[in-house]
Image 1 (cartoon, rainbow, N blue to C red):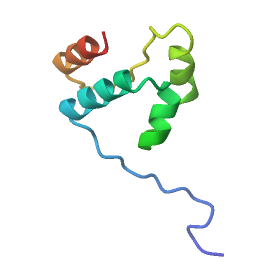
Image 2 (image 1 turned 30 degrees about the vertical axis):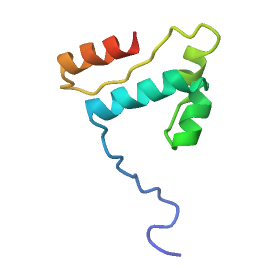
Image 3 (image 1 turned 90 degrees about the vertical axis):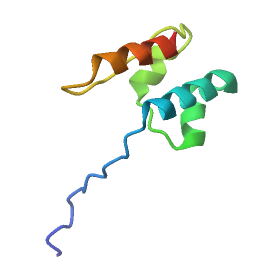
Image 4 (image 1 turned 180 degrees about the vertical axis):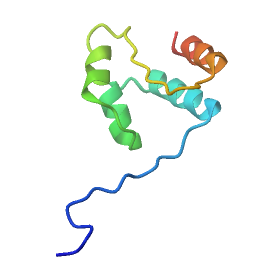
Length: 82
């Protein structure tokens, strides 16, 4: 039995720039796809709760941010999502 067997190694994801996020949002809105289909096509992770939040209502967003997240960036993101 190898020492690492049964352990999961975390993969660090590349953080997207504000411009990349804004472009993804624009592409999603013009795609006519659900969040789940758009995410699957792009290889973007989408949790079930995020998919349900947008469900039939289409107006709910769930944004998870870490400590020290720039408030200016959050305001810009919210403006893009409107």
